[in-house]
Figure (spheres, rainbow, N blue to C red):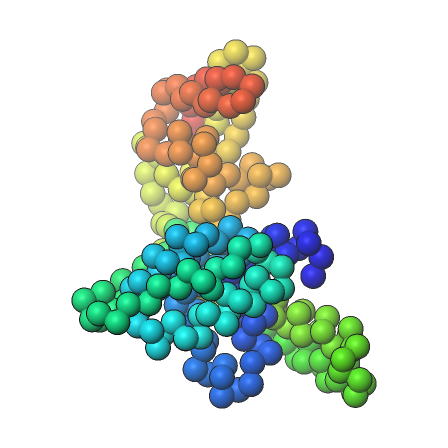
Amino acid sequence: MENTSKQDATLLEVANSFLVNLPPEQKEKAQAEIYNLVRWLGVSRKASSITPPDIADYTERITPSAAEPIRPFLNYIHRKGFTKVKLASHVRAKRTASKTATAIQQIPKMQSTLSRGGHAKMEADLTALKSKRSEVLREIRQAAADKDFSENAPLQAAREHKSHLEGRIKELELILNSARVISETQDTLQIKIGNTVKLRDSASGRELRYTLADPKETNPAKGIISIASPIGKALLHKQKGQTISITAPAGTFNYLIEDIQ
């Protein structure tokens, strides 16, 4: 990968890249613990953003045996240039049972709130990605026909393609398996996820329209904004007729909520 793509790679993508190259017997043992770590830190989180306290906090909750596969994975993240920090040295697995007994139960389940349209789109994306698996495997077989593995760039590219594909499939499956789909008949007295809001800029009189969505559904180009964004947070649970204020580097902007749909 180029440096830019390495900076943008999610932890789940890197995990799949690591696991795909392990021998089957090692992969079977490692993947459960590595996916637990990924779920704890966030499947969509960038690998480059992981910090030593993140690793120390998580590994203090697990047994030394559970931490065994995590160290080589963290070494891989550093060796491949996804982070400049040597995270493996911050593994702090405890031998005491008080924290480790319920370690896995303490890992929060990821849950997203999706619109019906967003849920349907993710399901369609998942189906499309799964249909590409045979094509990617064919690429790997063709590249592997060249026995010079030491300088087989096409084979490496094909394997990376597969790891990205499997990472995105796993991410969508995790989201869809735990997602809460919002009702289309919800009231519009207060702004909620899924609502489209008509705003009026108090200074310029310019009209704006935004649809509030889960962070995984956002598309700013189409006016679909995250409930975690500054304007999304300001709008959530507000009512028609109220004014919100958004502080930005350029100053403070006030918007009147004219309509909720």
